[in-house]
Figure 1 (cartoon, helix red, strand yellow):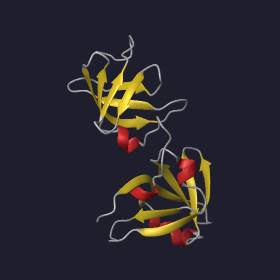
Figure 2 (cartoon, helix red, strand yellow):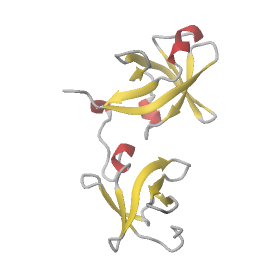
Figure 3 (cartoon, one colour):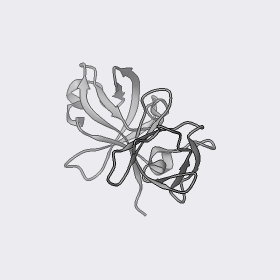
Figure 4 (cartoon, one colour):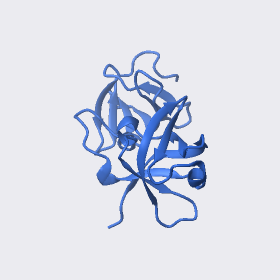
Length: 174
């Protein structure tokens, strides 16, 4: 059976001379995913198999996550990792609490009002701060931004790929 892989980040550059790499994170749980000792898999152009690495250190620097791997401790050893996509296999995603979802479960869901009117599909999730914001693609209209908060999002069914929201006044531009 083919393994399902999930994108958790991309190495965009090196940082310093001690083998750190700059990562733009695509994971919902960066602190957990990049914890020292965790195994990550790097998918690189020109390689058929992923490169397995173990996180040695993790810290934040501006908008980047800085990672150092146990297997590569200097600038020369990480130079080739630029543009690598960081992934984990499905079995390493872990269980979530009730009411928590992975981004890949939400992206692609159709969004409806409580009255059953289709608004569009979730095409991206932004993480600006206090709460996530879902970008809803709408046919022939500007994308809608929906905050993931209890007063707006009323029901999520990831199996059916359907989300029901309370459409508050002014939430969506017509």
